[in-house]
Image (cartoon, rainbow, N blue to C red; front, side):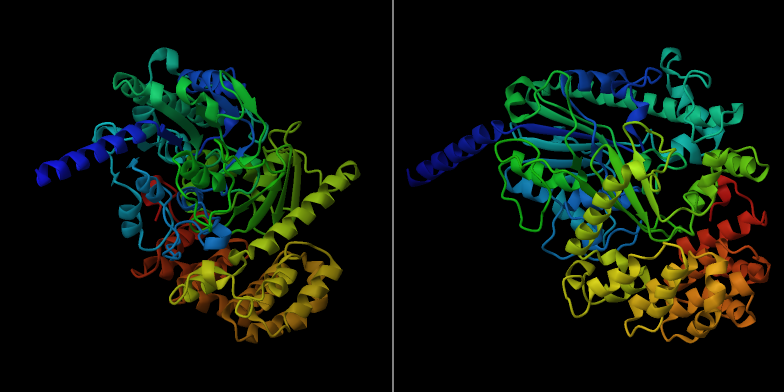
Length: 633
């Protein structure tokens, strides 16, 4: 009898658990890759073929101000899965593999605690060390076979499906013949968009060649929509639509040139739709059935929102908003966004947006938007653009992609979607500019942005401490002092250059680093006066300052000792030093003295992918290697 009572009690508890669980919403999370909202029908593009996504928007809620926190996949996905910004976790550099604190979990871990079955099908790319353990702890299942169908009867689910059909590989990087076989031929006749059936964005040259390449974007998105439709048919067949909230969004902006990897609206803003079944419509503060909201949201908000929706306790380290439900947070008036290294192309951009205006601060503007990134450089569309640039077929806007940037961008997205008119020097917008400059400085200082350390330093400190924790130590990381030097990097002029030369004498090596990086963006006439001080900095004990001084000294004055330092650094066994050296050489006019050294580095078996990719880009820019896809490394 005793055993019977214990069994009955256990049974009743299980029944109670599953009855309670069934009151919780199922959540289907559909992510796609490399896509900006302006290529979808529900965002006003009449040439797009996106009926499935459009229907979700017509019946649900469409967000017009949804932003990825980064502009390339792994940093964006790092924030998505942890809810922690990359400039706090040290995960801003693409595929960098640094540790985060053990206390920071993948947010589905907390959904499991609430009885959810959590599955991921199947991309991870979380940009952290010890990823296998992190993934096992985060998901019940993460594989190409994962889905809601493997849960226990009645168990609520959180299921992620990631569709690759709109990825940059489909829209531009894989050879055209591959695209025909894997995208074009997968579409029915009425699902295809022809090369003359859309308006060409003004940031690209209007030509038959460019239309051929750009049509890939529309057709890849069309195939994505088709695949999403197939998934929703499965949801309907399993009679789950009436109990499932559906999220749809892209991991960052469009994969085409000027978008992905660039810290502007075209790189950050994403399509984002939430669909609520009848029983959960009360959770939407925006209404449903075609509601449109201009509310600012970012990927930092997703983790706390999902934990809250499932009645979990939100960890203190999560600082994003709760977007919906009974614990909804107040809307914000601006967002801070970030872009750092992508593959072998170094960069650093911090951005503020209020939805209408977007202000970006380029800390390394000597590197153009169209910087050398091997995975992009091998694409036919980039090669076409470079060819058009070399034979002077591009207008001033289109040419700017390959030329040094200004230190600041300010765009009015409401009236200039393609970011063609930089308003930085327009007095009409001076109040907007000053406000956003102030917001950016305040947000960067408050976050104690650890990405202002060169990657060389992040890799070293990660051997004994996480970057997340390191940034909080004011003695180890005197961030106000460092940011004071970094905040003028990229700005040009004699007074700025004089200040940067002063930074070269600072006791703090990171301050000196930002001094030399800032000087690299100055024009020659501003630096001739300071030649002696810059040349002297080649003797700096910090290798990155010595390297930066050599890069300037060779570029401007063809200093022979600088040439030797650059060669030695290309050959360095430290991959971060070697990568920085080759990036400096990429934007140096006289590349001839370095060809043999770069060839040697390319053949070294122990060099990292990024260093080898940089070598290929360097040699490819001189037409010394093939730029075919199969020769990308």
